[in-house]
Image 1 (cartoon, one colour):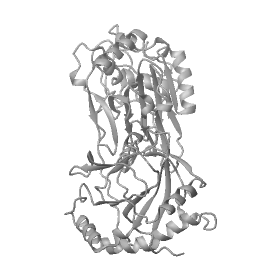
Image 2 (cartoon, helix red, strand yellow):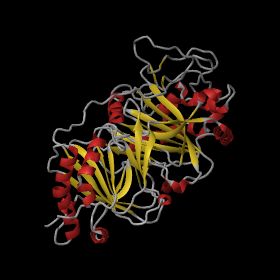
Image 3 (cartoon, one colour):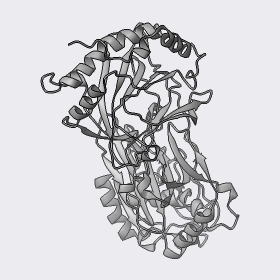
Image 4 (cartoon, rainbow, N blue to C red):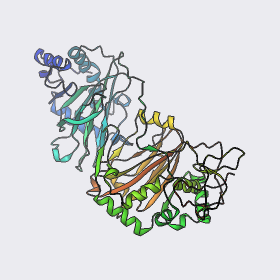
Length: 511
């Protein structure tokens, strides 16, 4: 198949090759934030571009959705039948021959014959969040835009990021609007962070894209593990009266707790609705609406707003709620709702770790609080543009921490639509489909037992959300073991074993 003369001759001149090499050396106009190239009118034939677009309208696209992207995508062009898709086959042959030879010459890199090419179509609200394209063997990434008359107001811009010394993206360095028949190319590296912004148009953003490969290019397998921020031990600075002030009494009733535990033990998750007494809920929500929040990142992991707890007044109703969530009293309630050993009574021969008393001051049986239990807890405001992602560091961290109980308390005034995004999606390492979705529901708590190998993320909140947002008190409890003492079917409740003094606590019996 003849592919000669298909590349715009401008890019075959010695002058352009010199400029290309200057960019690669770090001294060119397009060397920062990492070497990248804009090649408008890359293909010499406008008719061929039109034929590419027309042929792609007959191709099957598969829907792709995860923490990183939402888009429609084809299989690699190598799988296409040349008799049915002659134009796309010719395009692939062009990139595997003429373009490959041209790039080898221009870059001085000994690229191997492997060229991956697929097509993507971004529809309304689709996007691709910050990522660096690093994968074994990739050396140059490329995209040929195929949608005519694309406007900035249509969204779908390509963003290139500046990085900090840790190679994390920190700010936007370049913004590129897609132009029909423009080839964009960049060198893949630990600093090649980029994204495609949310598409705001009802038209599809169509492109062909892929990678050239280098045999000697390897991705480091070293993963830096970090400690989850906000890690603390549940405290005893809470009174039984405060528990009753906040939590719906239905969830403190022993009979109801037994029913909740049965459901949780069967499903490993449950949502408790109308969790907080309505007057206290409104009080906390009112404080959140006037509270101060700060942006948290980095952008390759998350984009959210976190509550500045230190700025809350000492008499804050919200602080009282946070003390409850992070208390041993909550750990006990969680044990009674889930059967997980976050808090237990020690009826063994060994000396108890902590002595507890009833509110009347009488000595009660000894209780052991699991010293290994730790809680990671923060308050977030989730609105348009918010998201979290799962990367290798998060995967390694999850494996290191072990089993976990997620506690997410949602606070907002009106209903939330999953069509806006913002839901919490759980998936496993080797499965593309989500295994569980937690949708934000006003004044509800979602409890989810999570084993290593299961990872949650907050789906990007798209433009459909408008000015809507919600708050979530997000806590994860770690450090319990499932092969020891179980709190399942405990007959003791918080009501009969509550604490009254600082330093006192309560717990169900071992079974």
